[in-house]
Amino acid sequence: MMPERIADEAILSAVDDGFARQVAFLQDLVRFPSQRGEEHPAQSFMAAAYEADGYAVDMWRVDVDVIRDLPGFSPVAVSYDDAFNVVATHTPRNATGRSRILNGHIDVVPTGPLDRWVRDPYDPAIEEGWMHGRGAGDMKAGLSACLYA
Image (spheres, rainbow, N blue to C red):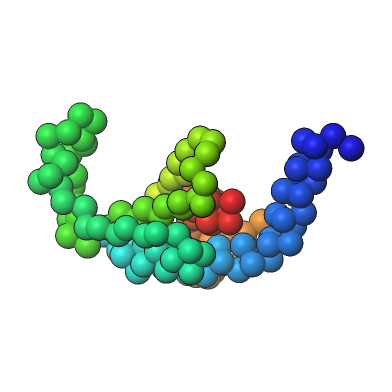
């Protein structure tokens, strides 16, 4: 068998082996209401998960006054007083190869009227192989995938 094929099979096997844990993690993450301005508990949850996996974690408050004059800055209409960024860094034993950056966002859009929901938007449910819940697809599944990559 070709080495690339062996590596592909090892990766697929590792994904299969960790799939149930990743789904459970995603369900826990979806349970956090993380609308704009309410992300801090979800960000702390992500930071703790990265630390538990051995990553060096840096978590800092977003200071709008510091970034206001940077290229690409968009005016903000909500308070950033409780907004935090989380960065997890893996430092390999041997610094060879190339760097990789995986990123995403944890905030979700507002739920709107709760009486329009079939279930609690922050109660993740799996139906026919699909997870339903606020942020399950955008972008909390992506953050879960980054952690489990």
